[in-house]
Length: 447
Image 1 (cartoon, rainbow, N blue to C red):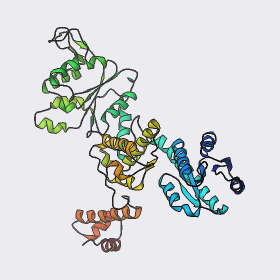
Image 2 (spheres, rainbow, N blue to C red):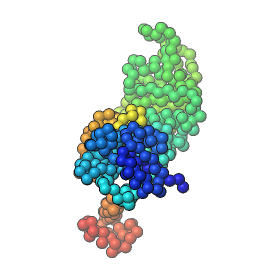
Image 3 (tube, rainbow, N blue to C red):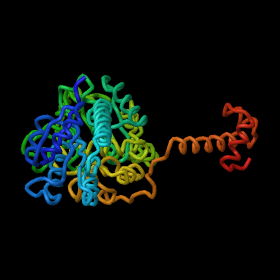
Image 4 (cartoon, helix red, strand yellow):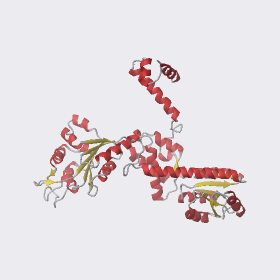
């Protein structure tokens, strides 16, 4: 097994030798100033760095060392930096941890203690690397979808099942949940993936222009129609047509679209020629189409044509853990594209992300994380950078708390179903009567 790497950044040659000797179990590199440290960092890629804050040309104070810390973390954000400082500089050392250092250690150096800190830093780096690897393999069940929740993984599984077919798909979900991303994934997993994916938002185009956008028009069909123009449906020949915000389609166009779905032919505006079109249709809406049908605002026969398969995307608030996962993926993307200095979220920021309801779903989360990555003053994003209120506690329940909540809810439900009869509630729960009495007392539930 190869040795773990450690980079020692210190301008004291005697201390360099002492540290290298005490760390003989590691592959040790040495640098005496900030520039050589960055060069060694790029060459050797050590997971752990020990950094003396008193570096030349300003060895009397910590300015050069703190600058080195910032640049090391900018170049290699996953690196664990252990700051080494004198007894009089404890305040500076604590500040360095706030700027992203893994830990600090005060001189004089005890090799045994420092080895323990370095071993812990290596272990943390290994765990984070493995976690990142697992996220890379699990975080995108479909292209463009970041998820680990059972709810969203089940939605992705349904997409994988129906994508190879030619069934017309209706995707339902609140604004910002990623309906177009799922529609594109459906196209990419189908036999039509080498043809066009053509998207049109039915709510974004004026009613007077929408028919022409969909079906095309002949030259002279209306004022300004100077030439024959194909519509979106024709452009989707052989591929996939995505009709977003289907619930906003005007009544007259609903009838014309229904005919196309039934006959698979279209007529351009101002034309009489029937043009066959082979395209797979995927629709999406945030509206309740059944409610619109009851109000005579949407055709029932069209609803059954577009919903051969219906798939509902759960809102972000109903996807446990996904908000934090998505936020981390977004932060990594912004950090890599902008070479920014922001490294991670604070625990309070993660708790705030987890507790927030996200009425704007993934679109709102993306907006808040991007803004925070740009505007945050330090390397750690706080809840106020996201413009979210920090929860009073961490925001996370322990397994014991979750179990107790589940037990109390189950007892109350079983009693309600059985009219308060302890024996029947016990049978339903698969426990003894004494166990039920014990739980009633434990959770102060009236029998």
